[in-house]
Image (cartoon, one colour):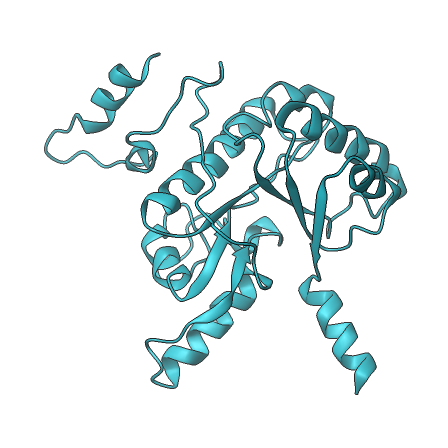
Length: 252
C-alpha cells in the first residue's frame, strides 16, 4: 500500500467515527522502507540525554511539581518505558493517569513536554505472544515515536527484538547510521538463559542499522558490548532506577 493511498484513508472521516487505531499518529509517515507497513520513526533528538528515567518516575516528578504549583518546571532527563507493560499499557485505565499511553496520549504529551526528550515506548514482544501481537507492538513503537517527533519532542528510538522469528520485522522503521537505545534491565542479557538471544539480536542490529551510538538503560558491562566498542561504536550507559537507588543507599 503506497503512502498517498494510506494517507487518504487516514484523512477520510464520517460523523460519529472514532479513531480507535490512533491513525492520526502516522499521518504523513513514510511506510515505503519495509514490507510490513511499519512507519518510519526518525531521530529528532540533537544531543545525547543527560540522564534517562523511566515513565513511572517521570509521572511522580510531574505530579509533585504540579501539586507544588510549579507548572513550568523542566527536568533534564529523557523518559523511557523500560518497565513492566502494565505500568504504561494497562487496558481500560483511567484517562489522565498515564497507565495506558496508547489511549492517554494527550496526558503523555503533557508530561513529556516538561522533560528533555523521550525514548520511544517499549511495548513487549514476549516469546509466547502470538506473532500478530508482536508485529503490532513494533508498529506502535514506531507510530508513537513518529508522532512524538511531530509534536516537537526530542525522540531517540528504542530497539527491541525477540526470538529469531521476530528478526524479520523488529528493525523496520528504525533509522540507520544514527542513535538507538536498548534496555538491559529485563531478563536479557542479565540472565544467562536469554543472553545468546540478546547477543544475536545485538549483532543483527549492527548489521542492519549500523548505529553510530548505542545507548543502554542499564548496564553495558557485557562482552557483547565490548566487541562493539572495538568496532568503533560508541556505547553510552545510563543507570536504571533500581541501580540508582542501590547506589544512593550505598553512599549513605
